[in-house]
Length: 354
Image 1: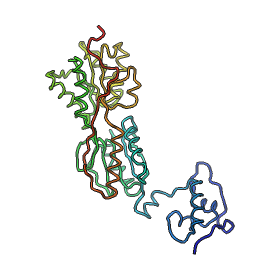
Image 2: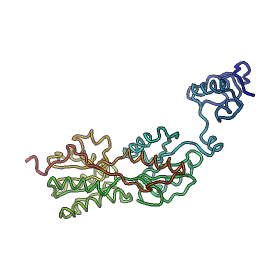
Image 3: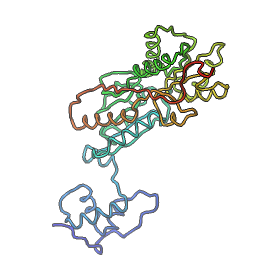
């Protein structure tokens, strides 16, 4: 027997939810004029409710913005239909990856939750293990880890890593071709005629940073140009440390005529230091970055950089994860995406102004 819509028979007094408060099932029942058990049946798709009543309650649920607890939902259904994206911190790279993940989630039937470790990874290597244990299986059905410090994680649900610190592992991964990208950026400077090329390097614990330095060296070797070790300074993907690295290089008795920075944040810091020291870019110093974050196009002058497809990284990671959750076998478990050179206005031939 089904429940008709009878507002006068509701055992719960109608109330208006307070602004900012979480809507409860009791409030939905009061507003719809039905019992709490009827609301529960509608929410869970159980029999015993007429189509008319179900439609009416559903409209009230939508109007009030009622949502069941993810934890309660997972306990009932063993699935949350939510995917988690875990990052060390929200900075330009992870933000662009998140945008790509948001693009990919549309139409999949899943929701996306982003979780930040608050940038505390220097103190807590292995943050992803701790946070995965909090969300996996109760809040999310699977997770994407962005630049994780470890990839030997084993949990009840599938996990995909984007640009992991440790490189390839048994965990499915998506990364950009950091080696070829760095070679491309340095080849560009060498082709312009630069021979004293400095580098503001990245974090030593990141495989992507290691590959970019290796690409820097391989480009020199291929051109028959020796690497001057005094022209390498640690930037560690940190703006302040990158500024100090750039100052060190530009204050040398014979400063470099060009600098390849391991990421755009370091390249933008280099542009700032050059401006402080009165070094003209690009006439006295050419600069190439890596990433092509949105800020690079807005720099003064606009930054020449190696573009890695950050949004595509997020998009492909979500696509892999959705397939894994569905029990599908991946065609590729380790995906490497191409990089491209974006030429703007921070590079020219050495001595072009003379």
